[in-house]
Length: 432
Image 1 (cartoon, helix red, strand yellow):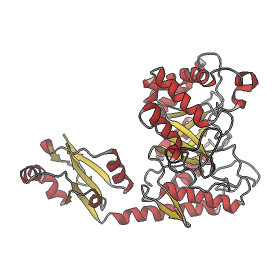
Image 2 (cartoon, helix red, strand yellow):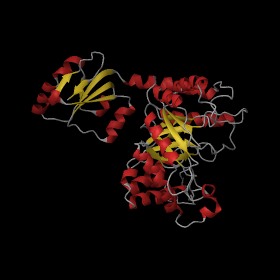
Image 3 (cartoon, one colour):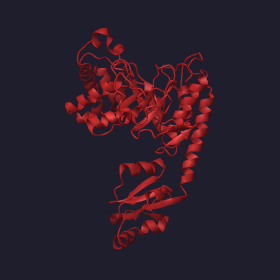
Image 4 (cartoon, helix red, strand yellow):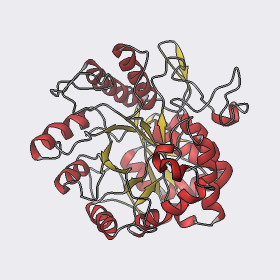
């Protein structure tokens, strides 16, 4: 089983790919590509079949249910919606995206689009649905917005988050997931366009991108949305990134489209995900830590060959992009494994001699069993597959993220009440 990645895909949009034969073909294929997230379109109030959902979960692939066509009236969700949400929660679903592009005139129609306080009105529509999801311990996913069109997406999102904060809906904020459409296939913008967000490009404003400035239209859209979340809520929010199914690539050959897809995946899956890296001579900064996944439009149920983003032919045969992803995935994890020159490390805070002697005395069971490298330097701990950290040593979120980026398994231990676990093959201590 491959480690959990941030790589996602949209599944087929039709209802013909959930039966046993398709399930047995595609779920193993997706797992072999390192896909850990799958976007499932649910345009009515009929549940996607449970065997398909269970097969995904058994394969460590997390489903994201996408419900873009929910009614905006009556003022509360239909009973069928609550029944569907409860069913999904019972099956293990945790993420449901509500609505799609509420900042676009097509969402509202001409009469609805003319309403005053459009964002406040949308929040009034959104809240009853989101409340039901939270009731059943699901995460509501805020709808993806049309990027740089209609009601400008960053302005819409800012007003929406301000509305939730002003109304003091902290129960929702704590469960909320953002989402955003990434523009990957605009030849006028390189893939590293807009990295750093509003803080780096302060002259970029809604409806205008100043000369020599950049905006949110690209792979780094999360940098822009997270800046808004921090400014409004004083904290970032997790975010799903989605290749826009309706955003057809233009002015690029199929080969160029596949190349851009592959470069985005390389940035997403690179073993040193917190470093600036170079891909084909272009420098890419780290993607926002809050990104949970980036989902591509790699599957198509069309009987024609006109979807250049597809990773497979209409007959289900892998295209070169799928083969390249599998090869790169193997190389990436091999590279990470090469970073682990030692099996175990004990990461300690700076202590005086008496404190260090006392701590090591309490940790004798660990020292005898695993003989870890003892270090006080985070970079040295990266060399170990398993990193042991005594309680009381509070690592920062950035330090924990750095250990995870190096695929280190973190083991908190309590020296005051520690004994070796009885499972010989498990490299853990029991935390008491």
